[in-house]
Structures are given as structure tokens and as C-alpha cells.
Length: 395
Ligand SMILES: Cc1ncc(COP(=O)(O)O)c(C=O)c1O
Image 1 (cartoon, rainbow, N blue to C red):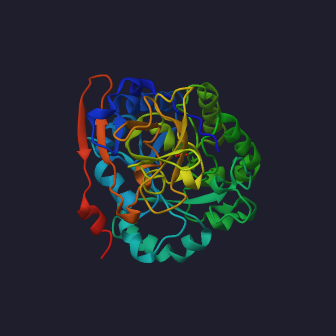
Image 2: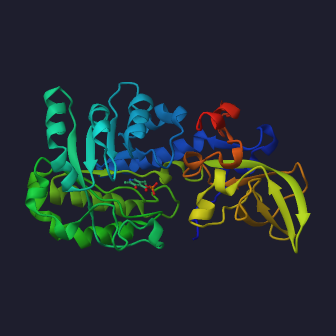
Image 3: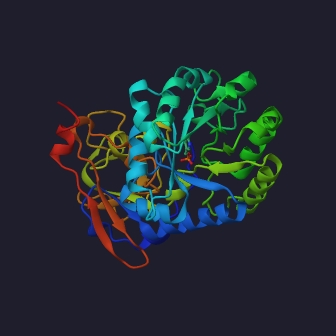
């Protein structure tokens, strides 16, 4: 899979020796630049925009996200709580929209308390939990109910990342949608894109619009999910704005977008260090960055993360992590300055879907989290992890 970002931007002048290794370093100025672009799309189109916490939930930046966007979307009870506690904004007015493929009855009272929108994956769960929904409302909770639909219109490059793949569990198949499924439902949600341009969204809408038209008068909102690469330089933002205006006019509904990756695109790096070098038919270096523990998408997607300052010429070195997994391989690279033990390296575009996915398999230490501001030059450690973080996930 090709990743479409990887611009070093201000990291081109970041001193890799100014932080401990390994460390995620996020540039607040780059996050603000992304947020400002999204805010502009929001303002011009009249859409509401929620930040998808699953992609990037560095909550020390929660107040910054709240300055620009309408709130967050959460994947379940923990993200909903994080959203409410850390992303509510100075006036506490930001929204939390929670969608989960399957809710547990015991979590629902808290999810209802934390959320403005609770989006279910099937009419079956809505019907089963109707008594809890009514009880929560009777007790004073204010939230509305949404239903995720599956557009049955695949646009993904890779089936693994396509919620419209055959037999997908994500969203209620739109061809089964009937009026009775919308009893007590205020909005419909779909999410079927991944790192995509505007046209796949437009085509998806064209594929489903006639099926949804009969229901507009019963609804208040439509949520077009995430996967919109809005902040990429060549994304068709004007077309998106125009499209949302038209859909708002045609449906009379509030339109939500919930991008995740676009908020943190090209806004963070993962700094690592070469620990050792051997030769096994080619130069092989062990680093303190583990693909499986720190960048699992490298193996899962799979993809090859771009390296900061990678030269065009020079010997190719295979980089891998310190874990026991034979496949803990980051990829083959030319190392800037040469592959010497102690040399620092950095992988680009690691703010999203890396920090949220780290784990401590083999007891591999977690990277520290640092916040840099490329405009002011400030650099501070936000969080350092130690043995207790490893131990306390186990018992
Ligand atoms: C329901 C939902 N909303 C939003 C997103 C965010 O998508 P992205 O980070 O690609 O913008 C995802 C990603 O999987 C998702 O599943």
C-alpha cells in the first residue's frame, strides 16, 4: 500500500538528538495548520466537523482541537470519556458522537451520559436497547440516536480498509433499510473511505442518495464519516465545499464529517536509534523502534514509512526492531549519514494511527511523546513511559 503523505515540512530542520529515543515528536504548528484548513472547509460548507480520536488522540492537544472543530467522534466508552474530559473546549460546548460496532448493555448508561450522538450499527441493537435509551432520557440525559448504514459501494484500494467489502460487519446494508428501522433515529452515518480524494465521496453519495431521499424528512443529520484526506495539498477542497452546500440544500439536514488522519497528517515523526548492525546477505540494523510495537500498520497495512532525509544513493540497510518477531521489519532504507550504532533516524508522518496503536509486546519500551512548535521553537516532553506502564497492563 502506498502512503500519500510523507512531507518532512518543518521536521527537515529538527535536531533528532534533542529528544530521547525512541520518541514521537508532534509539531503543534503543523496540527494547527491542518485544523485551520479543516476549519475553513467547515466554515465555507456549513458542515460540522468532528475529530476522529481513533486516529490521533494526543489529548494534551485536546484544547487546541476544540478551538477549531465542533467536537470529536469516539469508537466506544473510553474514547467517549476522553473526548468529554479533554476535548470539550473552554466553554464545554463541543460534541461527542460515539459509534461502536457493538455496544455492551453495561456500558450504555455512561455512553449516554457522555455522548451527544450515539450511533448504532444495526436496527437490532437500537430495538434491543430501546428501554435503556428511554430510561436514560427519563433520567435527564440528552443525546440522539443514529444508525450506521453500509452504502454497499466499495471505493477502497485494499479490502482490509474497506467497510464495504463483501460480508462486512460495519453498518447496516442500505438495501435492507426500511422506514421502521428509523423509528427514534435522528441521523444516518456512513464511513467507507480511507485516505481518499473527494471523488470517491461524491460517487458514494450518488450510489446511495435515491435510497435515502424518502427518509430526509424524518432525520436531522447525515454523517459522512472519515477517510477524507482534506489537508493533503492536492485534495479537492473547493469541490468538497460545493458538494456539502448542495447536499445541505437538497436534504435540509446537518452534515457531519469526522476526519482523523487529516488532522495529524504530516504533523509528527517517530525518532529512533540504530543499536547494532550485522551482515546477513545485506546490511541489517536493529533499531529501538519496533514495527510491531510502535508502527503496527507497517506490518498490518502493510506500508513502508518514509524516512527523514533518506538519501538517493548509498548502501541499502534492512531496519528491524528489537523484538523476537522475525517479521518485525520496518523496511529497506539508505541511512542518512550511514548506519552506525548510535545514529538517529526518524520516520515521517507518524502522528496518526501509530501513537494510538502502540503496545509493549516483548516488554519493548513505549516511545516518549514530545510536543514541538516549529514556529516558536518550544520543545517539551508531554509523557514518558516506564516499566510500570508495561507491568500495569498485565497482572
Ligand atoms: C467510523 C469512522 N469514522 C472516522 C474514521 C476516521 O477515518 P480517517 O482517520 O481515515 O479520516 C474512521 C476510521 O477508521 C472510522 O471508522
